[in-house]
Length: 380
Image: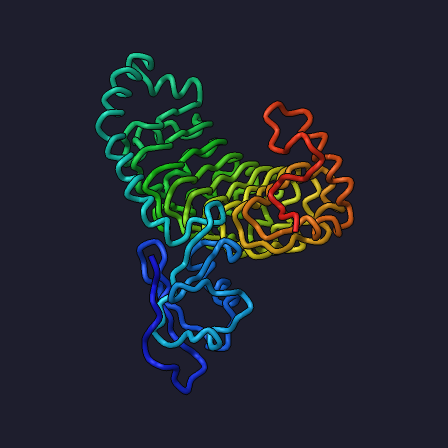
């Protein structure tokens, strides 16, 4: 299948509008006629979530070479260009994520029909005649997959007795101010609900000073507000599989944070303040829209695992291997970072030694038995 060229001749302006055919969609792009094909691919990256090296552009049956200009190729206003993407070179979730809510909605419908009938009958037997009393005595309120649309009032009535609240995989649409009544809560799981921006009362959440784990994954949040910095006891923050485009600079206040998972979002920039999260051990930034990392990542001296796959990264902080002396897991699959570049970084040899020792201890190691580094960096 080929997309033909055509349209009006180029005007006096340097800019032209072309139509990119990709995934059953037509994406309009305005770009200078003097731009190279490589420039066009970079422009398409955030629009299609396909890394430039995974893009093949075709016009009038001809594959467009990276170094050629659009003008020299005869690309004019209205030209149609077909984009073919190589498998495995997608990043983030981007515009293609629009199909996900339908799937999630189907899962919720099933959850609200079949699952609740099973859980309400069987779990009621397991819980005994008075589950509230059991919650009070154990401090654990387990309500995942209960088809809930709101937090039961009985939960708020327990107040400081609640230490763990699991509301995952429900259809809860609002976390109100009175969540602050659970003043001693340590772990809060809200993943896979109907949560969007504005449905979470951060005014209520920021008062939960004992909270160590907050899971908001698999929702539809596009931002984390500055108020997240008030949760200074947090050790684990999970916001993967949302629609985040950035992280607040106040994240630096989370000095006890050990695990940060924000993979599968649309994040295009990590704030310099990330360097203030000095207790971080594991960071997952994979499948976002990142093209660079701040040098302050080198401040994370306790960092052991850094997941960066499926991003548009060309390089890494130069001090990463030198200052992150415990780093032993580095996932670079689906990025544009090369082996030649990594070998130039100070501290590479020590990192490579740690990496080898780490994988030798694992039965399901990801590297081959050879001496090759196989964490996703291109060898050329």
